[in-house]
Length: 411
Image 1 (cartoon, rainbow, N blue to C red):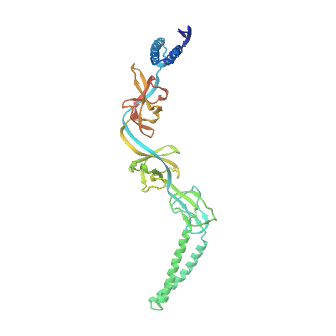
Image 2: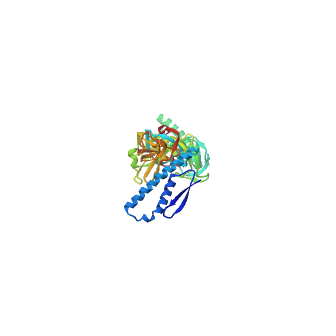
Image 3: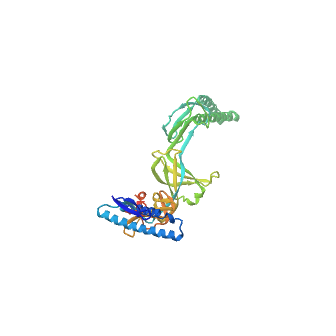
């Protein structure tokens, strides 16, 4: 370590300052200002001329210190050691080029099964049998449960017996009437009795069929709410069946976005439960009525769910296109920083000495979406945007490019 001795003319004392092997220009500047300030405390209340003279002296001292620092840095380089402020930070850059840009706004959505039903009987009765279990797959028309139908079955047996007699009487009366034997009223009464019993039998058979609960479509039994022996009536839920192969995705979108949505565009669909899933889905239906309570309209998608991994009432998000540009200057949003003066980026550029430095450029942002931001002003086509390493540099820092690629290709 070398020692620099600076003598104070007024106090005739010596101040020893240790200079490290790797010097910092800012440290010398601060030291010079501190020493001069100690020597000129009596001028703090001076006039404007004396203040300007002090500033001039400080600037002269800064120049002298900078020259000394440069000389010492050259000596360090001759000894094979790179000064600290000459070390280059490795970074990667991407060339800013015009590219297509689409802006999206996001809305929350939920999943709805297209085929979903709550099974209940059509008549009152006691549940005699439940033929399926939770989670069981069923086919359309398959019997799911039966009510106790003993009374109906007895009535059917009674009507069938009466129907046989009525049919015999009717046939005989018909034969006699055709032979012009007997009265017409006897023939008509026999025919009416026979036809009435036929209608009654059909009615009882329909009631018997209504006491049997069948699957309305192919699906899976998700829940069974009743037990065998319990009473059931129309409207009471006995079980739930659904088909997960086809789903609706429903979102309530603010009416303010109505002019921005093109029904022919595709919507980017995502699920929070499946972060890796992303699919472009065409719009299935747009609602024609604005909900007066929340001023929204229904936007609906339809998707195939052959693997059945998506479930009803799951939370989803729709990214809907609201703006598009063919040629825009776009950068990753994560690279944009902010300070008291505004938003800025770091670009790589050469200084007057031919060194590559990080340059702080203030920008005017445009629309943002899907992790990208459109830049209105501040950068131009061909600028080298610093991406990897942008958090380890400051304005004017020396950098070394380790990789360069096109921003359009990168995105």
